[in-house]
Image (cartoon, rainbow, N blue to C red; front, side, top):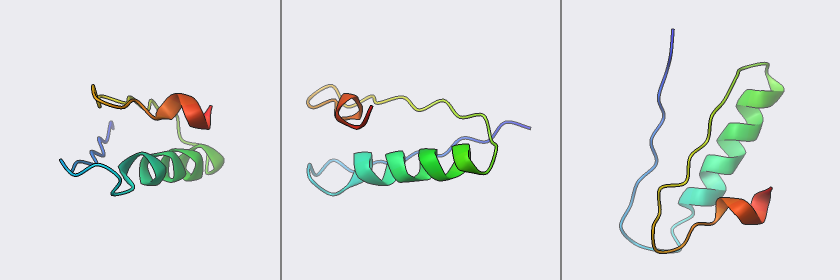
Length: 50
């Protein structure tokens, strides 16, 4: 079964990307297959973590 987790907030600097990356890593470490997509058009932050 597929699950979707969405983190959203209009305010910048609220920790969305950091939280998303920590959730992604935790799920990967427990054996889940994960796709993480950064849809923030103003400041895409995921590339910093990779």
